[in-house]
Length: 457
Image 1 (spheres, rainbow, N blue to C red):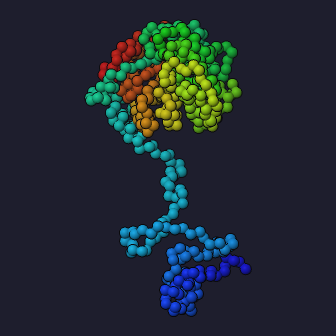
Image 2 (cartoon, rainbow, N blue to C red):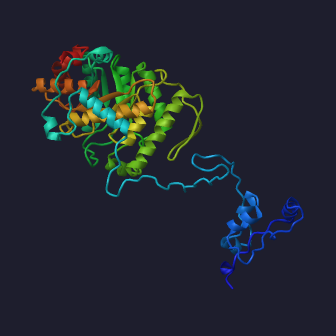
Image 3 (cartoon, rainbow, N blue to C red):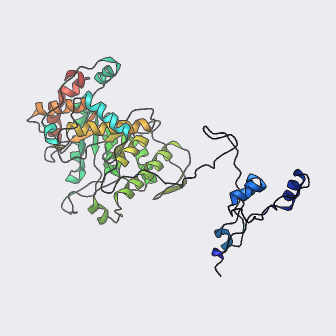
């Protein structure tokens, strides 16, 4: 016989309770607790009302589930009585228990999750200040630079007084010899450029060729540290997977000492799959590469700040590691993170001092005013949630044509009004790299001389 179909026996009061009830009635025997009269329903509630059992005993009834599992009673749960509005005194209801996750809002399939409200608000505020219409299409915004508006108040004075820094980026993968790289860096230093950057690749194009030289980025940085004197030196950007993060921290700290404290540490999640395959690195999905970047940033910052560092991450780990000497710049060299995804933005807001936005094509032609202001607004919102003490610096990189200076200057002024404070100009021709740097300086001299690009617009 299936025990689950057995009729449940009514709850019986313990003998002590029966004796107490008998004494309260003055020896008169009433209905035996737990025994049903002929006209009495089988309801446990009616039974408990007849014999006035305590609250705990009224809930200690057998159920088909407990009968199938050895007949054990359900555990008792005491609840502190409380008076509720609209409920008669003495009658209390058990609280409603909702399973975890029940009622959670989830986006419908095929619909992207909305932006955080803080990011949307920041985007709209920045777009409104710089006259960018987020509802218009990319082509409309591309041909319509923002109008110049006067800045008023303390915030406007801070924006107007911010100096515009322009740097040069050169790719050793284009086949430059070190002499050509050194002459370009010295020309940039003499011309008043703020920084000189090299890209970190092992070969140019999509396939390696023995006919084209490609010097390693950090070797070039170490040599430039001794050959230059004032210009800042950086990588834009080092792929986090190309070198063990602990070794990379040691290399960067050494170059910072060689340069007298002029290193800008640029790092990213990597993107060139052909390079990964050719040199035996695992090219993981984008989310895993971002996780590798997070581990690398954590290890580098710990080695630069702690006497002995220990970290166990998903992809990298160190145990009681030491970086000595520490970087000359205190508390550490500026960190730049390159990328354009929200997860990379979050890493930049947490670890970095600067964020390289420029990943929108070879010459930035598809980077509209609305997209620029939206990206900056979202980054500022993430920065606010991260509770940073110092603001992030932002940069954009692209190419220029010296024969068309006025459209270039107006475009750079528009980017400055949108919130960017540093520009990196690249695609220097190998045949005349030093002369090209000087020509570029002559084009950009109105911006490089002016401490107030926003005010001069």
